[in-house]
Image 1 (cartoon, helix red, strand yellow):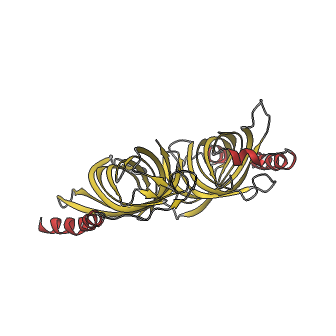
Image 2 (tube, one colour):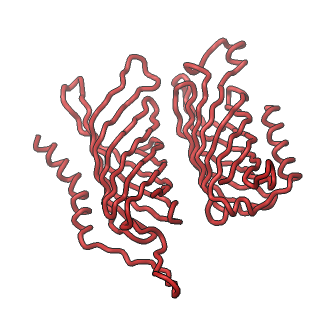
Image 3 (cartoon, chains in turn red, brown):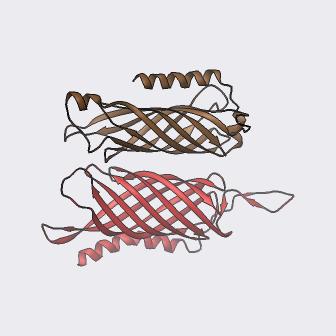
Length: 192
Length: 185
């Protein structure tokens, strides 16, 4: 039990540091001076109302390729996101479905870095084995990422995440803690 | 194979003789397309393929990202009639691609080049593939009273590692060649 809490503490310490470091953080505004009108901000301004984003992405989890889709709602520094992915393995496909809370470390500009923490379901679906059933487990994740807005409605997104889940070992009759690392790149479309 | 060669030849003739207008690509930010053609699966043969794609254009139409999906078949006369065997649970093929592309010559005869990744579902088994390819979008100004409609052709190579019946893995090249209608908006 102590080892379990120790591992969780080490794994979540990075997420806590990200949240603490966001206090008072600001990014320099990249402004375009228009002498005839108000100052315009290149990139995006997340503090002006609610923005919705649709973000298809691809990447790798361990040595397996993945595809996914994130639907998110931005309000200033907070971003609430639902994510679903397909991780294509050799003997099974993994479908992590999670709800994540992202903290935008800046609210204006072209580059918006963020920290993320979330939890959800992991569905492991065997593909070419006989008799195996779909296994569903709970998992949590945390990570960091950045969005680069090419225009006010389109941008690119990059993210790294650490996933933690447990699986029951039937032979040894105990739960094992599993760690997966994911790296993804994708695009993001913004709607108001 | 003959269907694949015919598709590519028709596409090249189309690029050479049909006048096109680069202004359509530069003016619009998105396009959707419906395409049909052939899918040559390594070791299985060539079958028909239909697909749809969405493109987001930026940089004046010189750069774009594309998401597409398509349906085809892995039917093989050799496997069915000669060896009487079946590799997968069924013959259905489903692919989805995420690509980035560069079109250095939107108004001219040179094609654009794409690269990205794809998911290839063969008879219920999924594979993660890399994709390289080329193609061309050809707007047809004034077609049906609109400047938004055009043709497109694409040739993609889906590359992935294949393992059959627990044998040694080998690299597979599946060639996808399509012609289609494109709507800019």
